[in-house]
Image 1 (cartoon, rainbow, N blue to C red):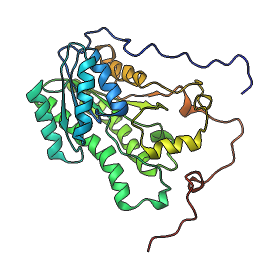
Image 2 (image 1 turned 60 degrees about the vertical axis):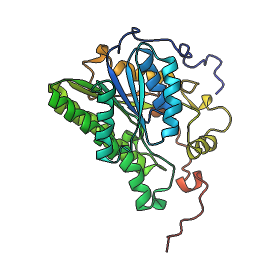
Image 3 (image 1 turned 45 degrees about the vertical axis):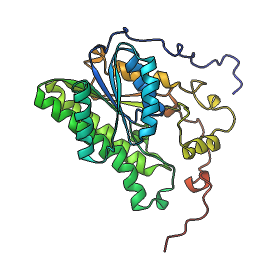
Image 4 (image 1 turned 90 degrees about the vertical axis):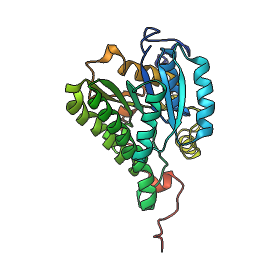
Length: 301
């Protein structure tokens, strides 16, 4: 790019800045799956800063312990607890809601952040690999959402759900057929349940992150980014910068806040317009196997 006028989108405010009043979630309980690491933890941190009582859930107890201590240190008026949960198991899902209710009360907000993903040519995906991603990303999200909805419907109370999605729910995801299919299902749940549960005061929205580097990215994802964008990642974004985790947290807290009550069934993409990027002249097609450094396909015996 040679245009001397290019400058990209401005950097976000500093970590700790608030887009909403400081007590926006005071007295409310927020449950975040996958809240022990990465973007889930960043989202949880913004709810905590705004006064929420926070429940973070994950399969790994050691990550939860460290995250709980970190989040409690930066929280506003709220409290923080953690619960080990495999969201693929409906009994464990019920138990994490029971634990949340025992600690603070029925969650007012559910953030479905937990997911699984790894790059692979579609033809290399085993049935177990497919199930591993779809069961966590789609079925796990559904089980958490269903439990949240059923408890609020029984109690006669409203609530807010934010599902973390992916832009390839619209476009397809070469190299990520399993995850793209699952995220398309997650997006459809947002649009379906917004209509079904709106009359009962339950809103549901989606939130899609763009390229937001963080310390907990898997080696597969990190390696793929390095192959796709060696050197400067910023230059490959229309915004001329990548996202910051706190920007996703600000978006999530807004969608679940009293200021967004008439927004439901919507999926908000926070990626600096990267998912809408197109070339004037289409680049040469490079097969997914080549992009991932795989040799010719050989069927398993």
